[in-house]
Image 1 (cartoon, rainbow, N blue to C red):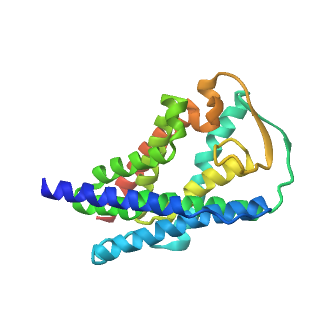
Image 2: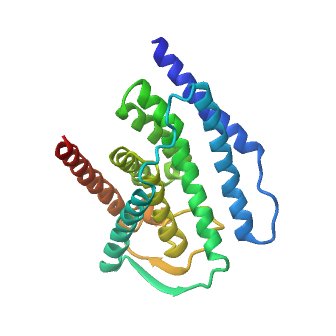
Length: 265
């Protein structure tokens, strides 16, 4: 019980400390929306890194909070996985007439918007699958770490609770999928890049994934048909199609990684 209580205390202090630090830092005003958004994503990332570093020191540097083996290989793997992950639901919806592109917009500073998406993705993954995940994994096991970190990840996407059961299930399964990728590749880089492609292509390019309201999107897309398929106000992240794709990818990766382990023995 003492071990459990101490683990819960560290987890709470980590999350609360991060939330307090983020709440007191505001992005500097800027007339350029792309520049303002860059600072709005950079500051929370710096807060996450600072809090993680402090807790890493408190753990006497015994916990690896940012596993990053095979940087190039895992970056490419993550991006390829992200293209498959985001591509399948868009192509499926387009095939059944639930999604179509009606035009495009010239987005100023597109590269900076994408950099901001990357910063946001690094922040999210470091927050939930960095110190917090690795600390619980070290003290208990992968399942406990996955459940707690996924709960935090879901709370961060609080809008899902207002939207209904399917969006919540999608966020949870997305988090478990990222955890499987982390464990399978032994690198936080892979889920970061996979998550980045999901948000970058899905939101900024195709406009079918929900980010902060000020994010632009290059293509003007229209979702039509049943909300259970199109996701309604949650867009693609509220679609039952995404839920099944998440489940299938989780099962497929678990089988693949398990076979890889056996082959290496």
